Image (cartoon, helix red, strand yellow):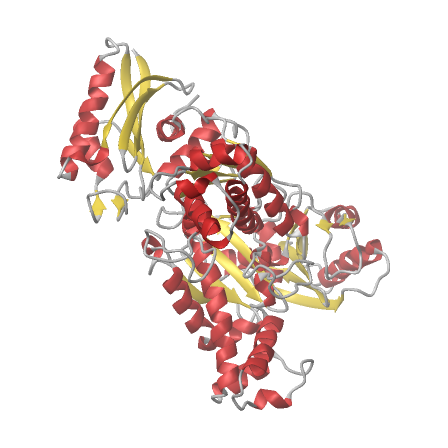
Length: 319
Length: 319
């Protein structure tokens, strides 16, 4: 029987499970709403059951080697989810233990952005890179950092929370309880907040003036920007200015070879890449100028988090 | 003959050379002004000659194993100093090559703050720590980062330039050509600039009003603060607020176990440690609160850079 790894991506909305080969092919996938079960153990039992079902559906061709999981606030060191803001179960959750008991194979956990960074390193465009940063721009801003060929884990397992670095003291309110966090400016909702701020500051005509706050998406702003809407273009410019400035800080600290952008907002292409790169270069300490690439993820249309979660297990195996 | 390593600390003012044992004892030391020689090769020849003299003075008891060097803008990867702002020789300087040719032993280079971080790890209070940050608060702000037990070097060898991360767009002018760099606020000159700004903003009586800008040192401000001078106390408070805020960012990125403060400004003790710690905790993402120690360096009265430079060589040796 061939070996296979289950990669699990636990998101605030859906949990996606895929069976991933050593080459990074996802041969089967399933998903279910994350927050249906009142008890966390019901949820982990469901993950285990779904993995077994996926394996059975392959007609006994595969034996499972282990389970890799990416989850918000997931700690690689303890295998626990700790105080995840967007999950219904609070406190410390023994994720790996529960699934290990059910399936009797090794289970490894990291946070969702770290998992995706690992996916980029092992199956994407960071193959061969020793020092890079992977940033997901979605409903929040997540990041995974690779230093010297290894995921930067940190002392308590939570390194890479770039989304909660500070842009502005007393800046925008963040879901985490602080103010001025990077993800309140640079994320899909951050772009929307910036667009609405620009509508309030400027008298420029804009198609955005006919949208409610709740109905507007980053995709809409992107489409309008491509059509030449000034406010929409400026929303991307301002978002790129803030991201570029913070990336300059990050480069001063980490000196990476490349920074990958992933997730909904990154699909706006040059609307976000060009101002980000320009403002990063403008803010860089001379020795770092023109040394770092800002690239789209090589896993852009794949489930990077599922692949990366699986990579947690595959990287423990000999080639 | 016993083995010994030469540790060299190249500063903007003086170059210090020490002979360091595997246990981290500096058995002999010498120094000379850094910027006397018009040609860089004269300077490197002088380093080599002084090392030989120090060895000879030990009555043939020691054989030299190698030379470790800490220098501003020193690259571990290339052995070169590149565009150091505070040295008279410009461009790319082949430091390691020149000294290797003269002494025929291995020569390793890193920047001065990285060298000191290594000193803390191998001979100081970071022994046994896998993830920590070392910050020197002197005429500038330098930093060395240790991740997973190894110095964070980065893609081009310049990781750890925390001093040139941005505090405020269009903030204070920095010697590097940018504006608003952390070291323009948090360093000995940064403290002085803050004190002078406070003198301009406030009408509070202060002994600082009788000093010229050029004559005031961070030591003076510290002494006055200890005597209760309000402006001097506030200068430390504001400095700690800015450092604490940036350390919160750093913790979000790196999740270290401890942050060591070293150098002139760190000798002010609680005047700087207390506000730094308080403002860091206030700005931390919840998962990091109360997880990181801010500590004085364990090498506070030693030449951390010389010990750390020597550690570059010693760490390549078996115990």
